[in-house]
Image (cartoon, rainbow, N blue to C red):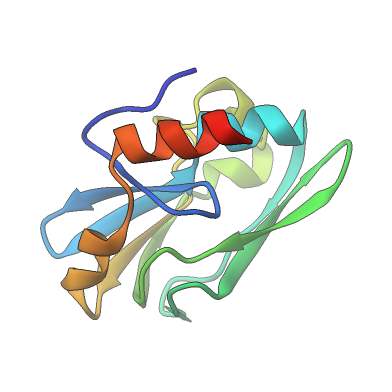
Length: 127
């Protein structure tokens, strides 16, 4: 299972890619494999505020609906609208095509509290 080393990870299985004062957020390969085939993705709008550890959207699979939890706080500056028509990208390409939102950080230090790839792999192996 892929866990890119350059990303940071939340306990709720979101990944974070730091891009200057912004972060790109999606769900991990582990999360999508647990959910099964994704059929719908609900995301916030550009301009919305997200708050760390609070829901910002959801993914619906053939098995269940799961909340997406913001790993950091800030303002949504970009939303991946490709997921409206192609939710299967979450299964096919969780780290490239299926990024979900870009957030302008309100507190960059929140990124430091997220797990490294190694820590995330240890957590998911315990499950």
